[in-house]
Image (tube, rainbow, N blue to C red; front, side, top):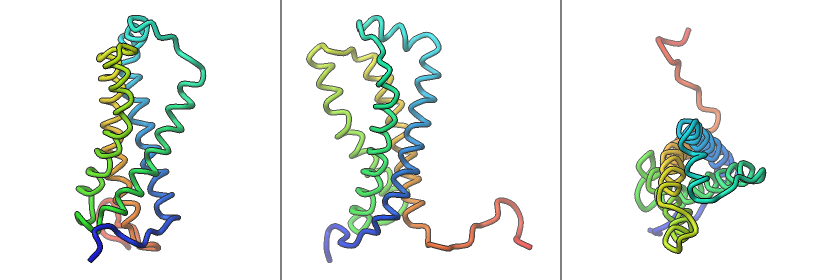
Length: 155
């Protein structure tokens, strides 16, 4: 028995990854809006960081790439740790740690503050976990499977 899965359905990984990436983006935006009404601009001013027009595009693309990586890692890990949301969360946490090692290094070297790191990394942690759970659900869904009704029975 192999530790990692040897067959990966690339179109399903892409679909699951795009769904995960969109959810990461939505959580990131929600966190920044919640924090951004007043504290986020003051954090940036306190760090002497000026916003760039490219920053939202970069964050959106990076979140989509992270979503695809989460989905791919979920598929690779599920033969070793099982299918489902738990494996999706593990894939998301591994991806989050890898993605934020550099950001933590900028804090350690004084290029950024712990406060700005905590705000952005915290929002993305929530998004990554939500994205990992969604990726596991989307990838494992049988193609053409009938959707369950939200309430009651089908007629």
